[in-house]
Image (cartoon, rainbow, N blue to C red; front, side, top):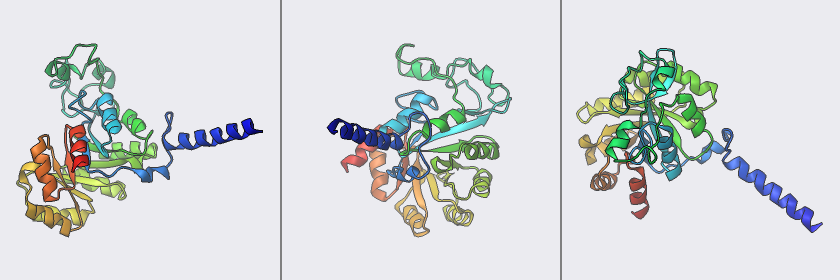
Length: 281
């Protein structure tokens, strides 16, 4: 009888654990309410430790505890949504292919870890070849946990296609969008008003007008280039009821200064450093 009770208890615990993080599928929509909220965005994933916009970099951003990872997307010649920052593979890869002019199979021949491997003086064993991931594969990865969300930055006119993919996977709870292109962000809100928008702004834009437009369009956050941030701007955004962030902040001293000003979210290539800094404050 004791063995039966112990077995039953173990089964209950196993079932409970399996609902928290599912290795083979998305967690339930109910559990998605437990997302982190620490103000740390890892653009292109943890790109200081892994090749940018690759599955290892994005997965690392999740594992170390950033509440958002961010990625960039293009559409290939054969209509695939792929994750890469530039319009060509030249900067990161061992070949120079135009993303919109290449099929996904052609792009799979590019090792997008090439530049990272050279800059970090790593061997092929230390930094294996990486292929350009599909947005669909990243979304499925993110949906296996309920701590970190992913912000999608469209680098061309592909918002509708990306949103259709998000909805087909029922991934709305895990997703946000960001970019400086106003029309792209307006389209996000038209297609899915519940999905958060981080509107990227430069250092020298008309800030009062940015706030007015963000409020008018229902955007949740303004993300300003770090060099344009002042205490006055931080207070204006907060008074307007918007969240405020800065991109891209890689120096510890700058992180500390912006946090002291009251900036709520920092985009950084060094999410591990920022998380430790926040923990120690």
